[in-house]
Length: 94
Image (cartoon, rainbow, N blue to C red; front, top):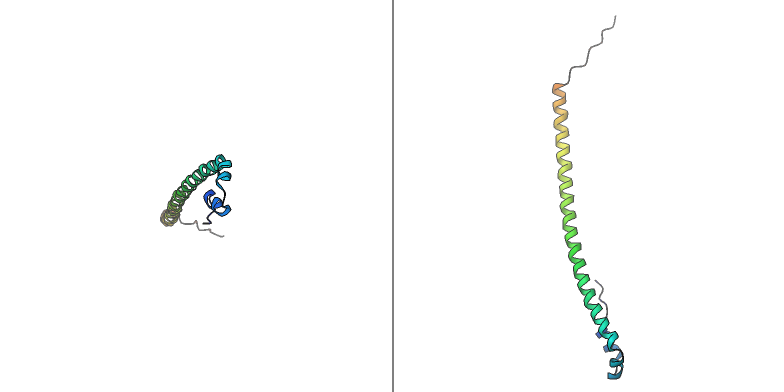
């Protein structure tokens, strides 16, 4: 996953003075708060995606099992039908 620069990374890169840091203090604090929110949202999203993947895997396995069972029942019904179906009527030609 691509990593993004944090506000602290940017502050270090720009080598801001104490005066500049004070001037932008509110913006920096807001950025830090948003970074924390983004980290939490990202964690929650990853957890949700993992849970959804597990559920989809279960659904896929269940669908495969149902299909196999339907095929088995179809073969069984066809076998029973062959045993109980009346014989075709013979045509008599004059």
